[in-house]
Length: 355
Image 1 (cartoon, one colour):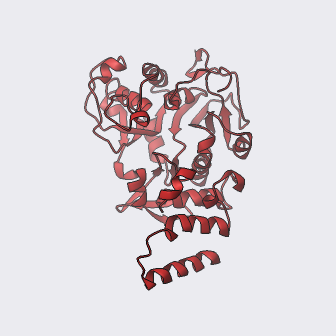
Image 2 (cartoon, helix red, strand yellow):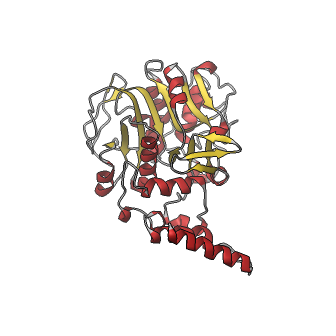
Image 3 (cartoon, rainbow, N blue to C red):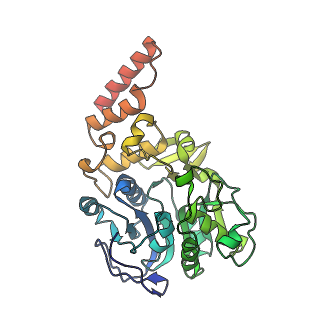
């Protein structure tokens, strides 16, 4: 998976021997740096994430742990992202590399984001909390998840307390306040290399079913104090198909979204298949994420202009792309033999052709 890039640790940054892109001054310590890990399969999601950050005025450098991008994909992103190679003999589940991804470059504020996340609101509040000495995450759907067994599994320094379980798809913290957090998270991840996850079993029953996310929450629930952890309210993020379908796009230009009357800062399309993957075609449904995804891939005002050849047909620009998405999400719904339904679909199609 690439040449060895993880060497001895120096100043909170893992020394590297390989860089797969050129974006910015790599030796400079960024005030804020965004870290992502992804591969070729996640190219549309990564493009959407980068473009959503830029549309919200976030100009911070973005470092991507490259788990296998194609050259043309790197070329499309090279002006906005720096690609770095993963270590040799990487774990079977790349989730375990999340802390290592964040150690490839120095930053005062580390921001880790999953490649299937779209930013739909300002992140200023989260970054202010991080600068003030908080570890910032958004609440997970399984907010009560915890296991006493974590203390032994991860070699924790104390018992595991009850605390809201966070989703590691977004993480922000200050390395000045928590200089050892990444190394400790990486150490805990290394303790569960080879363990099965819910992707293997389809079950969340194991204390390590969520891999690096369980490792991180174990640390936060044991080795940090409650006032050092800032779990953002559940309504601030829409995650999973049910919540994403129930989220309304208020202003597509600015990506403003609401769910239950509350502003949403992140859309997180965890799970498989992703809405850009061929296996998603039979079950593809309209959602806030899918609507914002297409806008971030084809609109002329985005920072990264993804070549259509690198995108699935339903996420390409132009009439054919719109028709393809309309067919997959609307036309295949049951007709129920009603004239009104046929008329409605015809009017919708005509409207889309005019756009």
